[in-house]
Length: 87
Image (cartoon, rainbow, N blue to C red):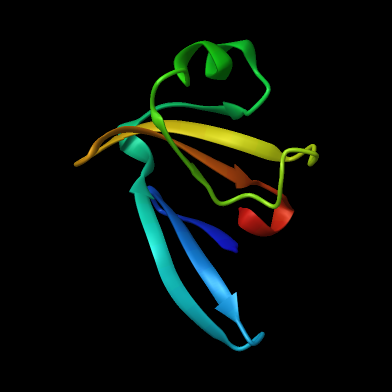
């Protein structure tokens, strides 16, 4: 997955064949309740009964972040890896 922060949007793209990108999802960061490391107490306390969309490389990663945001389908938790390439 490729994570892009552009203006006020978090864009998720899937890279296929190291050439093509497919748009997977997009979130308005202005609608986010919180963005924090996924292991933070605040995330753990809020993420109980909401849908989780996992766009990360896995939980073992030290750069795993979570965004809890409101969408047209209700509140969701978005998991993603934020490294220096994402900024």
